[in-house]
Image (cartoon, rainbow, N blue to C red; front, side, top):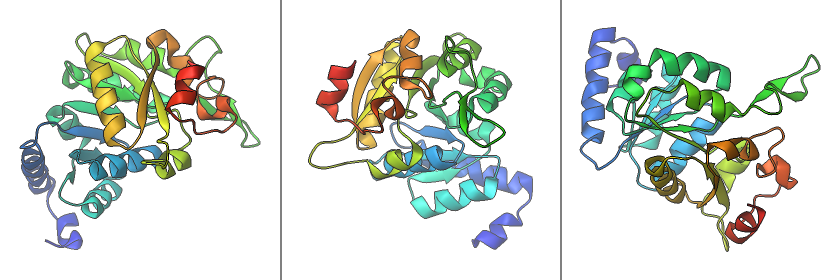
Length: 242
């Protein structure tokens, strides 16, 4: 079916097609939903598919999500946020923290028992377009997202420690892989983060528990790329920095 024909489907027909595609992807061991296909979400989707991870993409711009899934091939599908979250094992909220504040309560029932990965940073812009911190210095975006999750969800802060262009370019770097920090108090979430970071072509390094989320966020985090003078560090440098 052509993209034009697909775009002309009724909502019911498109939903049925989405469910069919998700069921196909669910035939594999694990499936990751990526909510948001901006710079971070798109880069992560590309890396995970390259590493063999099935992904389901959802975005406000449904055509963009569908086109990216088509580009990525048989390991990728697109769906509504509700469908993607419901049928995934892991959910990456690749959205601004203000959007996450809306999405998490909206889909709270579906997020129970899921691993929820949060790459958000407390970034805002002033009247001159300069980056500013959107939260108080003693409050992390991770603490906000984690507090909104339902009981039973497994939270981890990950995949937001590099600028989007660095995340896109640094996967499977040679001769030494780039490191990605993550932060969580949850063993299930930690195992999932390590698996996906590795599949994406990076070395995982735990920065600490949820209390350490601010260290890997920007602006202000000493373990974020911006806090490391722009350096994309390797495993040894990352471990030393922790």
